[in-house]
Image 1 (cartoon, helix red, strand yellow):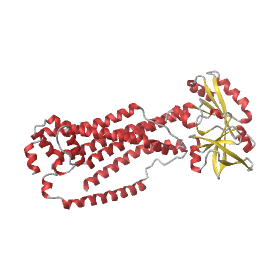
Image 2 (spheres, rainbow, N blue to C red):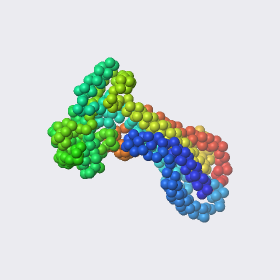
Image 3 (cartoon, rainbow, N blue to C red):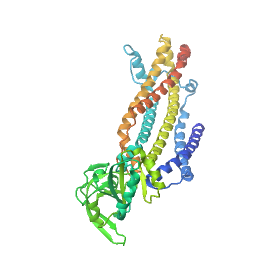
Length: 473
């Protein structure tokens, strides 16, 4: 019992050290994603309560397990639990040619099925976890952030005063054309409205064909049609073709009400997914005015000139607010680096856990089957053949765990990633680790199990058949 409690204490200490490093990283991610600044300090009181609960549960399990101590027979204890697997337990399989060694493996596997299955379960969970984290690191790439999560593509966004658009845009274009040309541009108005007493952000598109994240349905074709984020629709129980009432409050406090039809769903990481998109005519129908915020997005012939343009705008006292794809790119790259670090860290910890698990299981299995191996040596089977029989069985375990883990990943990963995406207001997440990553992780897990089993199997050459057989009698 003391050994388990010491191990538990070490685990909590290491966990606190890792959490001290991870919490500040996730604080920055959540600030960007949901606009909430969380504390970078550890919640020691809550953690202590959780630790005490876990300790009580484990102590209860240890107590129930140690009740079996009274059932241990002195002779079995002196014999270190070693007994012939063939004669004591397992499936009733006759050991004969052909397939003698396959029959023996089935016999031994069935005799210690719990040990073997627990090893497979460990590999399944760890493989699934590493692949899921690897998928997350592939999400936060600059291109995917814009194309799949942001809602529209751009190189530069400038926020204009609607009443002085012509003059301000001329000033901006004069600076822009010193460096590159404009391939495309489109207007997006920004405002807020109410739905069921909740504030919702409005994206008012000059051309809704610029929207890149339509998921279901179609783009609005009439002024009374809108798009709603699937994240918000699921939360509110809305469906395509449903009527929805929006309220808009004018500057003088007057409330305007408009009835709209949902023509489709889209997704956007903006404003934590609480966004409605509509065309200019639809907004005028609702508010009878232009949006309070007004921006224009530009796609450049030479996007790499963004930094030079920004430096020029800042040095020329350009009064308007602007943003660049480069800023979003740096944020995405930072988040990507965090998840890549987590993936590498989880892989290293998983390999360590696999080593410990494999070593423990191999030791226990070898101790229980050593008499069988002594009998095999006594009838003339070579050490190499017995060693190969032992290691191949654990290779089979590792490969089985990898296959099941991969199947489990394909079945559950989308739900897991969707849960992560929901924190950012994203409802659909398609992410798959590269084949190279899957192959590397699988090979590492299999190699670790093989090396550990091979290391334990070296003891076979030191087995004395006569002594082992005498111990079994």
